[in-house]
Image 1 (cartoon, helix red, strand yellow):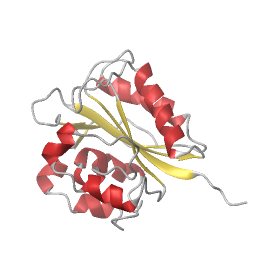
Image 2 (cartoon, rainbow, N blue to C red):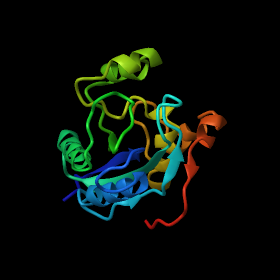
Image 3 (cartoon, helix red, strand yellow):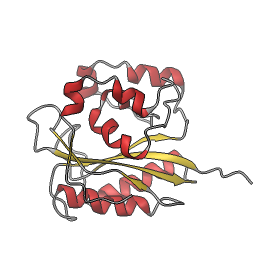
Image 4 (cartoon, rainbow, N blue to C red):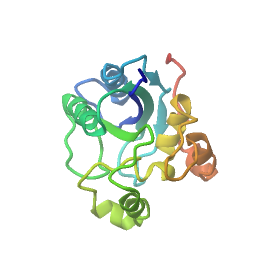
Length: 195
């Protein structure tokens, strides 16, 4: 029987203390919780520091990425990620505000949700509209994936060969097209991590 599980890509970030500890400890503990959702050994990236976005909106983020293998549907997986955020004390007060914990479902295999046309609309949304509106439903792959060094650089550790089903480019290829200044903002923290 063919394995029907999907590889799910998850971005993790924190720039605020939580009940789990400081930002790095929060991401570490979240990684342990996310790993429990995986049917096989989860892949974990190193830890990275990234300036808050928009600039000056808070302390640096600690970012990381994971690749897990799961039989869960994208919506079931998202529910589990929201439960882990809630356990860390996450509240969704303001888009792009300080975050105790942010778990973003970036992609699940080559699934496109809800459809390619809707995906394109969100992908092309101007930055000023991104601040004001957010989709009501899950959009996969994450529509801002190709613009975000703080997602792409950690993803190089866990899924450099994953291909975007609509852009037909791998994480490594997308990351290589980012402006150097954007990539340089994402700096690797100490190397004490294991795969």
